[in-house]
Image (cartoon, rainbow over all chains, first blue to last red; front, top):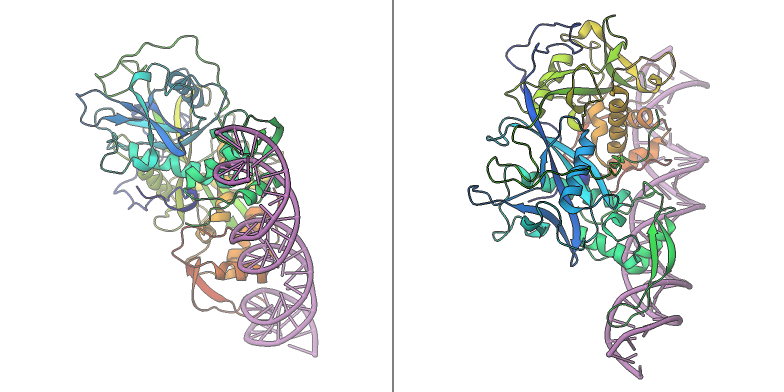
Length: 265
Length: 265
DNA sequence: ACAAAAGTGTTTTCAATACACCCATGG
DNA sequence: CCATGGGTGTATTGAAAACACTTTTGT
């Protein structure tokens, strides 16, 4: 798995013009040029890329599938109900998988489709990305017993899980989106509990980017960005010595100006 | 229309957990927890947000619809064929609308869905964003006579076009994506012809961001970013005096490090 | 000669880095 | 009292902004 720089969504490769184009027909079905009268219909599903931090490593939730399937692991997800919105469906399925409702962050990632992605169930899949704090239980909910957090760094190693369909790419896109968004949004706090220390927040960046950040400079950077975090009180002393750290909550900022840029890439 | 800062995709508002959740059933259809046996199927369409620069203004291509419809303008687009990929469908429809094949930039923007977005044709729409140079004809292709470039700044003015369904939001998302990507990618060149001057490139930023950039500083910034542009020769003198400018082509860079940040926001 | 646009040089400003040092707590 | 982690101060580096100035063309 290879991450390209900076949230580059990736352009669509140019396609040769099709051999024939349908003639214009319009004005009777609310659609536009070239539409067939009865369009093909497909099933729409939602796939969830749930990311969290466990033991200083960025992890993604995968569901183990039973032996009839050659590929053992898949992203959590399921079909979109006919009467629900895409965002609503993602929220519902996130809740079903983790019990999470208000905490964290959930956003649409990208839609994957085409006849070749899953021969057994053709259709489109709308992927969503969620950033979660380390959950109390690994993954309560219907798929709980089958769910497991996998460090994303292990996904392309030989002893890592085999992923179904295009799920490796979806995970890669989600991880890269998360990494990029840490740069210019305050979303790192979505990986933390409601109250967190600046060291907690710094460890999010260090785990996601696999870098070491200078604590003094990180502190200055975060505190000098208005609305990134707001202070509360003090916390219990950590395991094995050290000065107690101040606690913070998420602020109201939606973007970081200037951003917190990754060195490399 | 209000643009929020920095490519913020926007989180999904938390939803209350549904009253009931289906019991687990798995292992026979390749899907996961909670899936119905026969999922609802819908039509999938592609909407195109085609952006270009005309007369120093950022413009979007809209299609005029005939009187039976209460709303006069819509984004170009149409249904996805059963045997084609989403990206392929977007390429095909881009070609059908503009004749453009290899030039410019085309990427998936976001998927919009749910039962409430278009009562007449429920389904999901996958929006694509294309950045194009100023085309020779306004818009050749099947919808050509109905097509018009609209400055995006005029879209929410009273004398601007009325847009169907959620198309105002799709355009807003596309414009914000384009504005954000100018910061950290070399995509500004996608708005230019194959060969362009640094002033051409600067005018892309000035039009998209509605700011004035200092030509000397802009020049230094672009030339100091490896792979942003590569020089070629010299150009004819412009209309009415002035030193001829050097011509450049797109370089091989896919990201800008460090980015070219917008001042405000 | 003059206007207009391209391009160069230089100063100032400000943020990011590196790193020395102090503070508070557990053992 | 010492190890550990939190927090402060400060010098250095580097990039961005501001702007004066030179170059090359058309009229």
